[in-house]
Length: 276
Image (cartoon, rainbow, N blue to C red; front, side):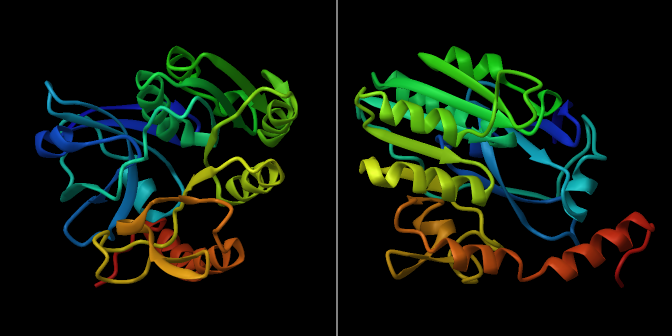
């Protein structure tokens, strides 16, 4: 059951779901697979937070296709057909030293629990969050509370630094201070360029891949990605991988596989139609 739903920014929503079994096992970096109704598609959503005592799990999503648009119409008291998880391997959390966490767009919801876990392990956490404009920023306070330093960027300069997240990332790497690990989560193109930025400095960079995913348990093979020339399944081998080893061109191509069908599905739903 949905305990609460709020709007964080235009087209971006947060939901708190009653899911005691998932909350009991959830760890930073893992995800759930949901269906809005019995005939709906399965979509993966990263776990943004959890409360083991309350038995609740928090998810954040952006309206993009038919299912996320439909999800945004639900309210407190409504129920989802399925809410399966936690799935995927949790993010590796050790005492690395100084870690830079980079969040692009609504991926700040994914970064917050990771940054919190890293800091609890004794790491110095420097966080960078960015969005296209000020109105798309959210959870700045949450990320700031679990970071030793927070840098905010906007593409249009409406808040924080004008520019993209790779610019302060490069400055930190060039500053001479030791950076032991970078964790970059956001749009695939952003993660690719974060990895390209860190590669000359030899800093291990972890990215969270979001290919097409169906069952989330490694059975369908839809989420396969190529990492260091080896085929991996993002749902069971990831979603975290070394960004320097990802075949980004193949990932981008696979993400475009069903664009036409996704567009058609959204158009039908918006017209009030349902497939028989």
